[in-house]
Amino acid sequence: MAGTSSLGVVVVVVLALIGSTQAQLQMYFYGTSCPKAEHIVKDYVKQHIPNAPSLAAALLRMHFHDCFVRGCDASLLLNSTTGQAEKNATPNLSLRGFDFIDRVKSLLEAECPGVVSCADIIALAARDSVVTIGGPFWNVPTGRRDGVLSNITEALANIPSALSNFTTLLSQFNNLGLNTTDMVLLSGGHTIGISHCPAVSPRLYNSTGPGGIDPTMDSEYAENLKANKCKTASDNTTILEMDPGSRKTFDLSYYSLLLKRRGLFQSDAALTTDSTSLAFINQLLSSPTQFFFDEFGKAMEKMGRINVKTGSEGEIRKQCALVNS
Image (tube, one colour):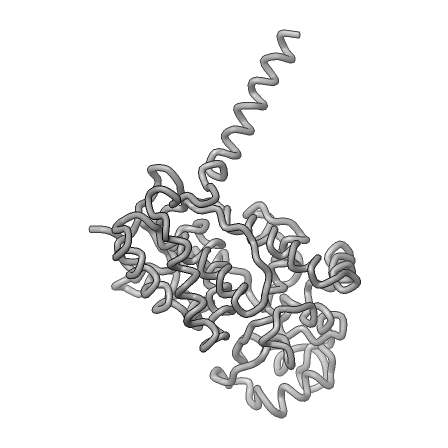
């Protein structure tokens, strides 16, 4: 019995350690220290996103890219005088919304100086903007603190590439405590996404099929992209819809396109190459949209907890692009 008792203590301690960073995030963390904080974020989002709905996808992507490098700590927002910060990494060069976050931060600083973290602003703005365009709601527990380091090399290593296969993608997600269904769900954010030709050109010009086209891509779709969008392999400016015809609607059509071999990225197409992933895509498509919304929300809340800094870790930046002096 003594052995069982001591083992129980060890298990409790281990579980406490695993949950320690998560436990310190809580709903309405700023309820006392800055009661209007979440309303200020939501009101600003509701005021501006209807006029610029594509920013919802940009803010969602920003949240994703931030959490995948050093956890959800706003390290993505930091500037570097030498061009060596996360935001200087190739996957982040096309990010938008930095000014939006800065404007929200200035409103919060005016209300409660030095209280609300940039990391929490990203998480709240991403959720509120998706809701504003008619997408799913999810809980955003708060209490994240801002990191003080930002490294271009870590961003290059940890942000999933549009050219990745399933094994590589799953490894990157697993490393952060996310599983196959989380990966399928979070990829569903591409339902409102846009991209540029460099992310897909290798599938159109440098693959193994006829004319350099990736044989896993629907040939009609590929030819259409080559004729009307990415007319040369070097085009790096043309904008592409990730969910053509439905980009402004948060819905299931992204998954329908995957089954038609019309996913834009190699990483989108990869989701159909694994039996577990494919089965879950079919489950999503055979279920009401609300099921997708609910499950997407759970995956977003889970992602928003990745390696967060809480308590006395990190800091509360005064300006989101700069560590405090």
